[in-house]
Image 1 (tube, rainbow, N blue to C red):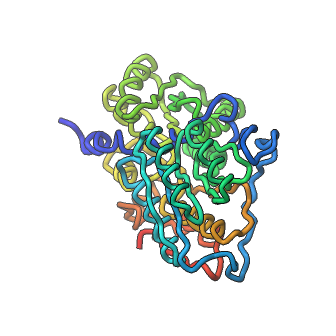
Image 2: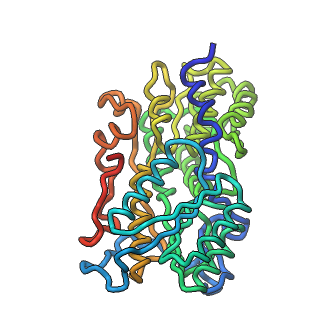
Length: 380
């Protein structure tokens, strides 16, 4: 019989596959969004793009912001509550500020996203949001939009145009938080299964922190590595992981660099009868993830994450400011919160709404907040 966890994972396997993978990058720019050579950007754009989380919006509403400003949201999403909540947060924030939003969703098809970006540009909105996407596909269209005077705000795409505003999770901080907790949870160290894929900008950033963690903490040793990026991340990672864990039966810990990889790890552990001996540490959170972490006997000990609805709202506030011709940083990051299995159980957390009540720090209303932007309450 299949357990509840496997049923949940199977339903979500395809749905979250774009979460990190849409930030795919080429060898030239995978380490840092903002590679050189784009229209409007200097040749050393990558080195010029620095994080500025301290920038405040003006107290007075900008005169350039129209009362009925229009936003085009061009997305690469999948089935699942992460993308639903991200989009809901962004849409509600735009509407609360008096704007309207037209959503284009390529649902995993890069050619469709290119076509939709053309449609968005031709519609002449006041601002375009690009939410995930393949860098090689969307960068030329971002250049086109900016050349035509349309500001662009990008979330988790390795962009090359220095005139676009780039927003992402703080991936280094995410990895630091979860690996720090893994060390706290296992003070004597452990034998690790590392679950990640290469060539994806945020996952590559997390990998750098992980590699340094191994150097700094020799009591943690890597025994296996697996992870697949396909249309069914969890299922295909589980297949690869079942074989890898079978060859490393002394594994005691697993670090999965995002939640679909963690789900695949859970399946692989069950397939090998290792659920009771391997602790899992992941990244990202959703209602499905919460259910997996809190079910009886779950080995998923903790995750480091942002609230997707809050992230969508932050990106929306950046787009509202951009529509009003406000000067924005080239790059901003959104801090993550450590979410442990113990915290979830102690607070009776069963979904994202109850998580927000238990961990109010997931909300960041001051990030690009302003008196002229009515704040929203994610999940409300």
